[in-house]
Length: 166
Image (tube, rainbow, N blue to C red; front, top):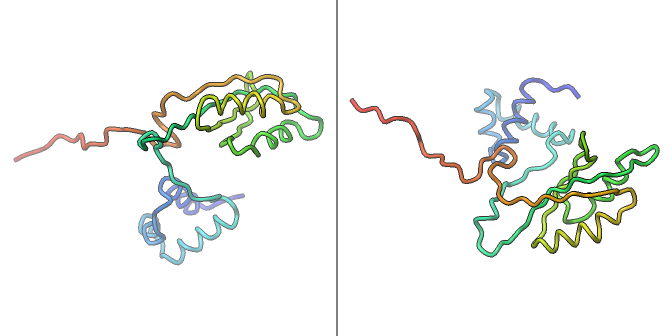
């Protein structure tokens, strides 16, 4: 699907901050509000903008003990469907947040979130490793997020410009 430069610009703007209003986006792109609204509607209808999300730093919320794991999965591809069938069986589990087909040693990279290490371990041993076609898994637990989806966590955003006084 071919997009205009303006359509791409609007998609990039909304990817960075989905809370911007049509009026804000119109000012940033020098379009009318109606033109902006039509472009956004088109991007939504064509599933280019899939949905709008919030990025939450859960570590700042007391009592929220979430665990994130990145799991490398080696699988045996199925005839005529390749990796898709196994990927679909994996991503249907509620614990799974992302599934990527990868190049390299492993075939799939799976991001899983759970309430505890035991919950993630249970998922790997009871659900993931028992799927037909899964040969092996390697689990990496995320210890700290420094940057996620282009956003730096706990950055020192203080103004670092030198004060110029007359």
